[in-house]
Length: 362
Ligand code: PMP
Image 1 (spheres, protein in one colour):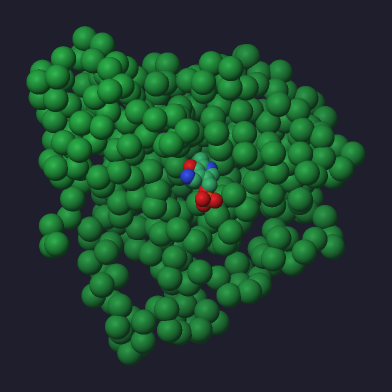
Image 2 (cartoon, rainbow, N blue to C red):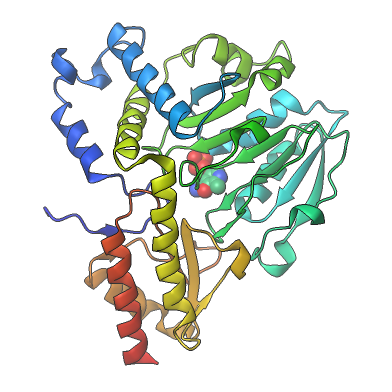
């Protein structure tokens, strides 16, 4: 099959076609080396250039200040659920967790293995449909850090502000909205993101960490789980995911060509608004999951008011050339993930399909 379809997968997710084409063109011989990126040493000068490009790309696009390090790790965002408390939550101390969805809850479970976890806010009882206002949060002044998930991929709820907690180390899982909009990195001690939604392929995790936070990491940590050691070795304490880092560098180039984070943010808002409009103007045929102020621009979650139509919706959607629309197995319904690389045309076509489907089945 030659034609690329509209891929609404939540992750691994659609990558820009231009990025895949460039990777294809460079696959057998990377920039005159006669070798693929996958075939040369991570200690070679060829890879040094790739690592530089990925790091500088993220630093520039996310406006990361100088006193932060950018790390490329493995183990997925899930390993960060463990690594954060292993490094920053001693057994006799407390960390605050804000839980607005499934991933935040998983992060809590791992942190509880290390120390005392205080869930300062949870929307579990309402089925994870909203995020707190800053004023609703009563954070512990003695917390080692406060952790939250800026976009909950499964439920489609997103914070529309950077958590501001002066004096506290803010740790953020930004796996599913990193580089989708401008953020104020200066408010965070540590941001982490699995790459497989907005940055590149699975198997590489980006960590942006403040140098003061790095200095807090204890001595004696297992080496591959030690932020400080990894930072001292520029993400090359052991062999990094060289291919993944290379693709991140290409995605950064592509993002720059799109006009950077600001331009992409506007386009993401436009795409999300079209889908939410399709839901809201359906006379209740489609029902959105997230409450309005918390609606995600990346993962649009909704269900059909008549659940017996779900199957027909997926089948006809697949026939119309849309893939990956089934909601996560824990919540059901529909989830349209429209990360940076998802084209506007695909959103236009899905909204037309939704309208037509509602007219025929309402
Ligand atoms: N956090 C969020 C917000 C996610 O969406 C995901 C994956 N979908 C994870 C963490 C876990 O990522 P990984 O599978 O890379 O461990």
